[in-house]
Length: 141
Image (tube, rainbow, N blue to C red):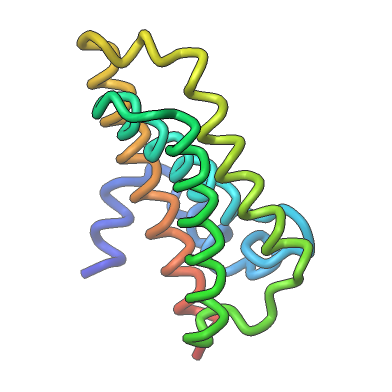
């Protein structure tokens, strides 16, 4: 069933299968494809703090806390046993960059464009995380 859904969502299934089956794209010593959902997570955390009218400084520290907590969770549960320390650090930094990138554009969130932005980023986040998870499932077995 997952194959049928992916074939429906993606025009070029061969490219998709290449991305899913290429572990090197997902596990690099510094930056890999997991940087995309990490970056988008930072954008979404920033959007939440902006939309809830909370302190952006607090939001930045919260984003950092979430990033570090996630990396510790991955290590503790064995999700990522081969991840290089440099990649762990890069993942945290990329999430914080995602947060910082949205801040100058916070006025965009005040109208319909903001709804489209948050919705689009959310869809992209789910899609890239799903691709990463499916790829992980292929080489984890």
